[in-house]
Each structure stands twice: as structure tokens, then as C-alpha cells.
Length: 567
Image (cartoon, rainbow, N blue to C red):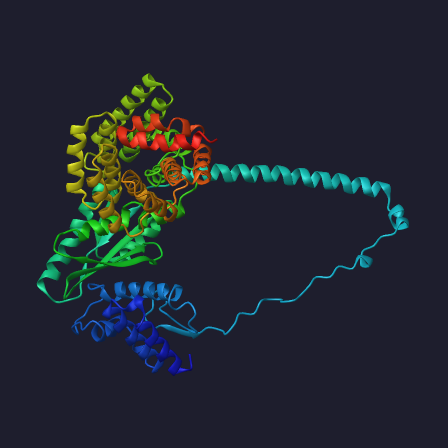
């Protein structure tokens, strides 16, 4: 870019933005490479010079042993992308850092984008292609027949080819689904940015503690390495049906304590998928927060895996991954496909611990559905099946959070409330920031009438989740309804909509009925029956089968009866 003043102005605008306000290192890194470039010294920008000028490294700096420049450059690329997606979306000058280089690109966006072939119209003159009756009669009848036969033959060949191609695509898709495998996580040694003993000690222990914590989340393929070049080389040798992620981190001390800057990188492409920071406050929870952001509910790796996987669940990792993403809000339709594909998965892979644990949870839901229909013997048999599935998971992966999750769900449904309380205490002790488990525990505590404990647990958990889901708030709505804070309950329902949840529509109808808004209440019941036919007539039974307190059930039924009486 020729206009140096515009580049300086843009640099200043970026440095003052919210995206860069919290990181002196990123501001210093960007300032150095931009100023060197616009002042004609771009050829001097190397990993070594950045380490010396930006990070105050010693002259014996070795980039193969110290990855601070590479990892901070990844963070800088991501920060620039976020800036231009939000605050800088209308900026006329774009500064970016190309992958694999440290010399920035500085370009000026065009004032406007011209539309190709604007105003161009395709005209069609019928006179140019008109054919007279005499011309048509002049064509040989034999020629017409021959051309028709050829046309039919070509059509048949095309149809046959299309069928073969479609069948091939379906077979290939099925084969591809079978080949998908759980991802591999590679944890690199943490880099120390500040020269103090607490930072060094924490950085040294971070990879070990992180890999240990991830084991609770069934991320079985975890490895630690220092050489990132070797990682990418090996990644390219693996089949394309298995994702490989690298976790890099830097530790620095500030006036509030230690800060962990971490990145999630695609090992095949070296693209930074995410970059964030966590403050270590001395309570040791920073590792739990990092684990949750990586592999917790709707967390990064689950998000990226969901984008890659086939949408149709089939036996194996594809089924397990889709089932994990549906664990909070299981509709009747979800329960059916989850039962089928999980049964197929454990039949084909009997040592798949995650699949057994998930199967146990789904079988509990099957048991409740059977009880709702009045099929008590079938319900008991399904609960016995759930217990056997849990025992298989326990035998294969006793330390897994999902095994513990299945145990909590099963003990609650079997009315073994003493064991349930013990398991809850264990879960909160060894997985203190597992949002999935805490929300499940909160819902069960609410059902048992431990309302204040449930509310405190759910509210605290939501504050920890990077991107809370609307379904996370359902039992807060239930608690507001129970306390007769109906307007607040309605506001929360309107702001946190969960259209695929039966409980959401039950609460929507009850709240609207209590407010005298019968049209809205009727619409909610209609939506409930559309989601689960005739469920509005079995709500009381279902809540009893889920062990909600009788006083809460009575309030729900009373409000819904008001609506039904006017239908």
C-alpha cells in the first residue's frame, strides 16, 4: 500500500479496539511488523527479530525450542479476523498476517464492488428460430424416427448412469461414516512469557494436568509433543476421517495473577480455530475451565466435529458424537434414532465405553416413555437394560465423566437417592466445572424439591459457560413459576426459546394460563402435541415418572386444566 498515513491510522484504530485492548503482546507484535513494513524494512521481519524486539528474548533465541513467536502470530491472525468481522467491518484499510509469514498484508478496500454484467439482459428473438409448416413437412419421417430412438436411448443411458452414480454416492457415504474416528488431541509444552518462578512452575505442569483432566472426557487419543513440524508431517499420513487438533499455550504473570493464553489449531492445515485466555486465580480451576471450553457441552471440538461429520447418524463415532450433542434435550424422535444407532454401535464395537454410557441414558428415557404409556413391566425391563449398559461402561471406563453421568441418571430413576447423592458429591468434586453434569444434577435436585440448591447450582454453572444454550435456563423458568414470579418466568421463556423441548412448551402453557393469556397457552399446547402427539394429556404421568414433587405437578396440572376446559 502506497499511502503510509492511511496504514498508520488503521494501525492506531486497531490498537485502540476492544479486540486488542487486553493484550499488550499482540499490540506490540502488530505495531512492530506493520511499522517495519510501511517504512520499507519488511525483509528484516523474521522470527528471530520479532523474538528480540517484541518479546525481549536473549540473542541466543532458538525458534525450534521456543515457540512464542509462532503461537503469538497465530493469536494475532485470529484477533485480526475477529476485529474485521465486528468492529472493523466497515474499515477501508485491511491489515492481515498471511499464514506462514510474519510480513503483514496492508491493502485498501475498493470504495464499492461493481456487479458483473449489471443491467445486461439476454434478448430472445423468436423470428430467428421460427420454422414454417412447410419446413417441418420437408423433414424426412425416417429421420424423425431415428432421432427419437437415439433420444430415447440416450435418456435410458443417462437414467441408468444416474442410478449407478447415486447408488455409488450412497454406498460411499455409508462407507465414509463407518471410517470416522474420534479426534486426536496433541498438547504442546506451554511457553513462559514472563520470567518469574510461579509462571515457570505453572507452565511446566500445565500439559500434564490438562492431559489428565481430558481423560475424564473420553478423549482417549491424547499425546504430548514439542516439535510442531513433526506433528503436521504425521498428521498428513493419517486418514482424512480423523481430526487432529493441537493445543498450544503461553503463561504470563500480570498484576492479578497468572494468565493462560491458549489456541486450538487444526494440525493438518495449521489454521488457528480458536484463541482465548483464562485467568488462574490460585484455586486451580483454570484447567477445568480450559477443558470445558475444549470438550464440554457445545464446546469447540464438539462444534468443529459436528461441522465435519455426516448429518445422518450411523453406528460408531458418528452416532456417539451426534448423541452427545442431543443429551440435554432428547425429543421422542431423537430417542428413537439414538436407540437404534447406539444399539448398532455397541453390537459392532462392544468395547466402546462412551456408546454404552450413552445407551444407558437413552434406555432410561425409553423406560420413562414406557411408563407414561402404562407399560410398567416393559418400563422395568428397560431400566434393567439401562443398568446392564451402565455396568459395561463402568467396566470399560470407570473414570469417564460420561460413565459417571450414566450412573447419576440411573440411580435417580431407580429411586436410589442415597447413592444418587453420593454420586453427585463425587461429580462436583472431581469435575467441578463440567457444565453438562452440573445442569443434569440441578434438574434432578429441582425434581426432588431441593429448589434453592438447584437454582444456585444452575445459575453458577451458566456464568461459567462460554456460550450458554437456551435449554440451560429451563429449570430457572420452572423455579420462577414455582415461586409465582410469573412475569419473570415469561420473560425468560421469551428470551430463551427451546422449541424442541417438551418441558419448554409445558412451562409456556402453564405460565400463559397463570397470566390469563389463554390464546398463547392454547398455542403452546398445540406446539407440545405437534412435538409429541397427545403428550399434553400425559404430562401429569410423565412428571410423576420423573419424580417431581407433587405440589409442583399440581400447580402445572391446575393451570393446564384451565386451558383445556376452554378448548
